[in-house]
Image (cartoon, rainbow, N blue to C red):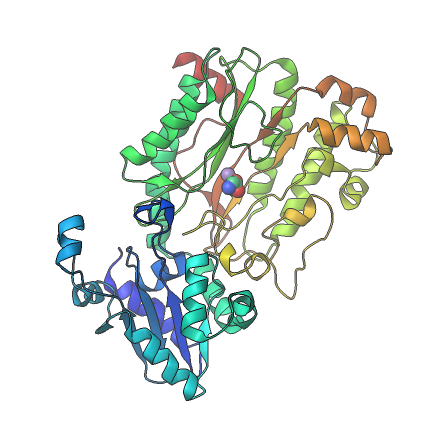
Amino acid sequence: MFDSKTYTNRRNILKNKFEDGLILIMGNTDVPMNYPSNTYRFRQDSNFLYYFGLDMPNLAGIIDVEEGRDYIYGNDVDMDDIIWMGPQPLMKELGVKSGIKYTAPFNNLAEVLTTAIKEKRRIHFLPPYRAEIKILLEDLLGIKVSQLKNYASEELIKAVVEQRSIKEKQEIAEIEKYSEIAYTMFTEAMKMAKPGEIEFNIAGTMEGIALQNDCYISFPVILSKHGETLHNHSHENTLQKGDLLLIDAGVDSPMHYATDHTRTIPVGGKFSAQQREIYQIVLNSQMAAIEAIKPEVTYQNIHLLACREMVNGLKKIGLMQGDTNEAVIQGAHTLFFPHGLGHMMGLDVHDMEDLGENYVGYDEETKRINQFGTGYLRLGRKLQEGFVLTVEPGIYFIPALMEQWRKDKKFAQFINYEKLKEFKSFGGIRIEDDVLVTKDGHRVLGKPIPKTIDDIETYMILE
Ligand code: GLY
Ligand code: MN
Ligand code: MN
């Protein structure tokens, strides 16, 4: 946890944005895996972590705006708990860590909320995303599970997004510190990516490195020689010479800050001529995007710039043709790049998406472009100093999509379907880094993981 002042300050900033009401922030509970006492690894709610910092189940926080007091609700452990879990800090002690004087048993929460409802006080709560919390909130607030989302406080959502979007120095330091683990995970994977190796050995090694460093993974490892499947979680293939291996993985740090990187590497350490061509186009697109990152520029425009860079590269090798700008406006490039350039990152790998993607990524000024592929851009709005985001363009040759578009003659003025035949079993390439928006520009976070063709080949062959 950070210093207790961090949490007090964060709550005060939030409180000052409201005139009245109660702000209710629910912590997470344990979730059963296959029977009640065999639970998934506990992951605290990120909003609760941000405002209260306490990383254990069955807690809730209330910020009373009129009273100007903060409360934590949770139970002290009893002897049974001590026998199974060992000694645990008392609620009072947890309160001190969080900068909170007022702690009370969890059951008191129902009483406090019932009184607030009777007094017609506004209760601001965030949209719940877990079934357990939805059921609990239905009980506590008397709002049906199916309706909770509609009653979530837009004012609170917007206030939280505004605050959490700008990362504190200590948050950035935590991300950077644990990017070192990401570096080790990826470079170990590079050493292992030899013909005959099975994907799950590499994926398991990467996850193991996270665990060995008191971390977890920020999302299930994506690791596949079928990189054309964007989120491929199956790890059963045996690698062969000539394969490309796409690895997209991240660390969930002990304080639950995420990292998120992608590298695509040649099995055995040497890219083929065709692989080099496509790799260089993706890299140029990623580098152009990173270069353009600075405050006041919209990420939507950076996404479109990355797309134009990609189209120019694809034109050079004869896969696309025609006017670059027009191709991008019409969406012809989305055959190759059917997703967004990146997303916010922080306590969540897709930061704050529980609050609603549009609240995080868009605003009155920048609206989502509702077009195939481009519509998946999760972050479009103007960048500000302190944002942490990912830059992750990719080129994929998705056989089913290529076949469909070819049959439909879709964007035939821009796409060379004859040449495309050569890429039927190419796979996919994505390159991803985590970037901080600084006062004057940007900084790529973490120890650089080999990324250029030369760096990757040199690293893989030397190691
Ligand atoms: N969670 C995968 C990605 O956004 O890169
Ligand atoms: Mn990723
Ligand atoms: Mn990402």
